[in-house]
Length: 477
Length: 145
Image 1 (cartoon, helix red, strand yellow):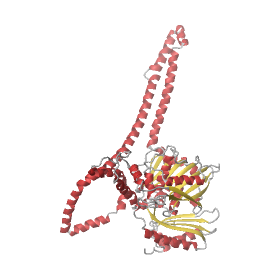
Image 2 (cartoon, one colour):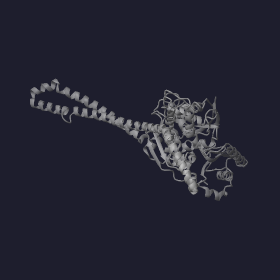
Image 3 (cartoon, chains in turn orange, brown):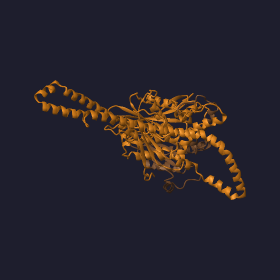
Image 4 (spheres, chains in turn brown, green):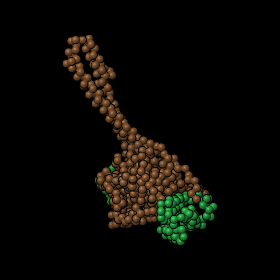
C-alpha cells in the first residue's frame, strides 16, 4: 500500500563549501599566498643585492672586468628591471591588498544589503501609521461611495463578497512567503510609528530579535525537568544508524510523529563505532502547544520557547537538551549532531551558537534544521549547519531574514506546494522527501557536509551500532 | 538597528505582543479545537485497543495530530510477535485508520517492528491525498465525517 514514491523535489543549494563566503575565503587564501610569495621574493632580493657587494665578486672584477660588469648588469636587471624581483615583490604586495579589498568589499556589500533590507522593513512599519492616518478617511469616503453604488446595483456588492470568500489566504501566503518577512520585519517599526502621533519621545529602535526578547518577558520560561523513558525500539529508524540525510530526517519525522501535544519528547541516537568512539544525534521536534502570553505553561514545546529563542534567550528547552546529553553519557568532547524541525531547529541552532561561549558545553559539530528560522543566529565556524527550507513554508520566514551564505551554513531550498501552511511545513510530506532527494545530490556543499558528518552517518569503514534513548521534557516554575 | 530604544513606553509592550504573537500564532491556524482533539484522541484510543486485541500484536500506540508541526496525520507504532507477516499487520492498521472518523487525514505513518530479535520491521508513510484511489479500492470509501 505504499505504491511508488513520487520523485523528490528539485533542490537549490546556497552557502556551504561551494558557496559565496567560501569563495571569499578562497580570495583571502590567495591573498595569503601572495603574502608568502612577497616574503620569498623580498628575501631573494636581499640576498641577490648582497651578492653585488660580495668581496669575491668585487675582487673578480680585477681579473675579468668585462665578465664582472656583465654579471653585475644582469643581476641588477634581475633585481630592478621591469620584471625584476623588486617589481614582482611590489606587484604581489599590491595583488594581496587587492584580493583582501575585494573580499572585504563583497562582504561589506552583502552585510549592507541585509541591513538595508532590515531598515526598509522597519521604515515601512513606521510609515504605516501616518499612511493609515491619511488613507482611512479616503477609504471611508470610498466606502460611502461604494455603498451608494451597491445600493444602486445590488449585484455588484454580491460579486465583491463572493470574490473575498474565494480568496484563499493560505494559498496566498504560501505562494508569496516574502509577505511574512515583510510583516515580521515591519513589526518593530510599526510599534515605533504608533508612538509618533502621541508625541511620546523615543523610538523602539530594536529589530526582530529585540522585539521577541521583549515579548519573552510575557512567557515565564522556568527550569527544565527531564525524565528518561528508556530505549525506543518501536521503529527501525531508532535501531539502525543513519546512512544519509534522508535517514536523519526519518528519525526526526518519527519523533515528531510520536510526540502528541504538550507531552514534549526528544531522543538521543547513541552511535557506537567499532573503535569504541561514540557520537550522539539529538532529534528535537517543533512546536506543539500554541499558548497565549501571560501564564505559566508546563509544556516546553510551546509558543513561549519560540519567542524566547527568537529573542536570543537561553531557553529551558536548550538546557534540557544539555541535560539529556549528560544523561545519555555524552562527554564534552564527543561529537554531537542536533536535528530539529521548526522550533526544534531554532533551539538546535541556538545551542550551536552557545558552544562558542561554553554556555552549551557539548561538542556540537553538526546541525540539521527543517523549516526553521535560523538566519539571525551567529553559528560558530566549527559547526556545520544544513538548513532545509521549503520555499512555500512560511515558518523559516518568521525571522524576516535569509540564511547567511557562509562556508559552514548550507541552505537547501526546494519547492513543495500543497497550498496550506501546515502541509508545506510537514516533516512527513515536505521535508522527508526533500532529505531523501538530497542523498542523491552531488552538489559540492552537500557532498562536503555529508563527508564531514561521517561520524554520524555510519559511512566509515566500521559498522557502528545504535540505540535510541527517549526523554520526556517539561517546564518547572 | 540592533539596539533597544533608550525610552521605552509601557503601552508598547502589549502592542508588540499582539503583533508578534499574531505573526507566530497565526501559523497554528487550521489546527484542532480542544473539542476536536478530545474526539480524535478517543478515536485513536479505540483504534489502539483494536490493534492490541489482535493475536499477532504485542503492543500498539496510536495517535492523531493536527497542528502546524504535524498536520492531519495518524501514527501507529506496533510491536508484533516473531514470525508475524508484517504486511498483514500493516493492512489491518491501515484499514482501521482509513475506516475511522479521523478527519482531516492527509497522512498515515506506520512503524511495525518485531518484539524480539534483530529481524527488520517495516515503515510505511502514506499520503492519503495522493493515494486516495488506491486506499478506496483496498478498504472502501472513507466514512462520512
